[in-house]
Amino acid sequence: MARRIVWVASLAAALALALSMSVAYGGISDIFGSDHDLGSPGNPTCNQCHIPHNAQGDYLWARDESSTYPELTGLMRLCFSCHDGFVTSIGAWIPVYANHPVEPGTEGEDCDRCHDPHEGDAWKFTRTIPGVQWRNANLCNGCHADDIGPVYHSYDVLATSPNLPEDRTWDPYAYPERDFSGTRLFNEAGTQVVHSGDAYIKCATCHVPHGGSGGGMNSMADYAEVDGEYHEPICENCHQ
Amino acid sequence: MGWKQRAKRAPLVVAVLALLIIGGWVVWQLGQGGEQEAPIPSPGEERPLEQVTTRVFSADLAWSSPLAWKDAEDQATAESASLPADVAVVGGRVFVLDTSNGRILELAPDGSVARILDSRVDERMALKGAMAMTAYTGKLYVANSGAGTVVVVDPSGRVDQVITPQVEAAERAVRPVGIAITASGQFFLSDPDNNRVLKLDGNGQQIASIGTGKRDSGEYGLNAPGGLTLDSQGNLYVVDMLNYAVKKYSPDGQFLLSMGEAGDTEGTFSRPKAVAVDGQGNIYVSDGLLVAVEVFNPDGTYAGFIGRQDPADKESPPLFQAPHGLKIVGDKLYVIDRFAGLFQFQVGSAGSSS
Image (cartoon, rainbow over all chains, first blue to last red; front, side):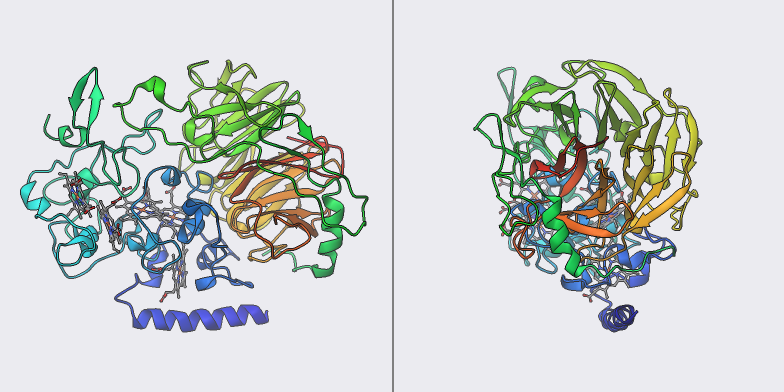
């Protein structure tokens, strides 16, 4: 019982702190009603990720960050504990496919570069990068705009590719071959899926954060040989 | 609700742990061929348990191209598993469910891959995110989670039957991730997307279910049920993952016992996954976040855990990465780790649990 009180108190303090810095974090209450609202009577929603009893990790997480497998260190340990095909099938394939680079265990540079499980209103729990309009690329350009770096296109890639299609397919669950050729859609704010018009993460036509068969994050290979002929899948995805 | 009080367990742990892993660790050694028996300390004897190589086969992440630019034949031939989820033993032959590659691997005694059971052997082996399998009457029954079916596979790789569960409609499609089969051929499937456990006859027709139709707790309420197993009396054990408990039900579905509570210290559950029971009725539960297999006495009290490189030193590094599927066959406990492969332990008692 004493522990419970400590937990409640520390949570309340953390909560106040988080609310006072609410620009950086999704509202804590955004969890409720979202896909991460996984509580049941006696098992509060928050406990599914923050374990109150004798927790040893940061943020009262039940996790052991140590792993000889880079795929399983930092936040991934927590995310994979459910996104493993068992608790949910969503994203179970993620460890197998090339990811966007992350610094496991470093706040803001782990999976939380792009996701905040508290952003219950955001599409795929993506972090909201408020304030600017980088042609539907807010999420990515929050870090990759040319004045921000560390790596970026030396030219305005979206301006030079004005008509990137938004109707590509995407099916990470396709069997036997997963299909990462597609574009995921975002609205202007980068918070919701929209299926038409100018509103999607255009970067994702060519770079998929999870998966892809090209080098790095490229959705498709830079070149390939098919029946002795030279092809550029990533270009031919649009320029057939 | 209905949660057991935390047991005072600290002094118990060391003693029981030593007893539990009585035989030391029997291990197959890669490249050595044949089984290697570790020296067996007599119970109570003060000496650290012998540690031999514990990895049976490599589960290093295998890359398979998702796109058609590669020759189809070229895919998934790597002799390693990708995110394997379960293991089953048929007549002494060991099979591993190679989940991310959609296939089953038969292992040779030295732990290498002896045979690949995939759609090239039988095109109905269309496994999609399959999370569990169990042996019954000489065959492998695979919970083909992504397809919502049970695929019955002959050890040769020929598909015998594909059973589609005929069950009460629920909010979402059936996604079976746990499977257990009774002596008379009735199935239990766990369906975490609908927070229920289904009991089916041999043709897949629903007979009964446990669960209240929503995320719930208490004796008959479940919150994402995962691993299932049966003991020799036919009692059912359900890992109630997001309720941090393992629940025991009688063969006719009466609630008997619940063990565990949320926490990240030993004796509690952080992310419990699968369950197995030995011949004495001891209960083994894998936990993906504690990175250990926890053991409970038949009455549900905590007994100890397996999962440190030096069993005598709880502060030593974890043995596992992401322990998941469990099976006990005879006196052997098999643990599938989603990343590290297959581990095999000697548990001091004869018995079987599917």
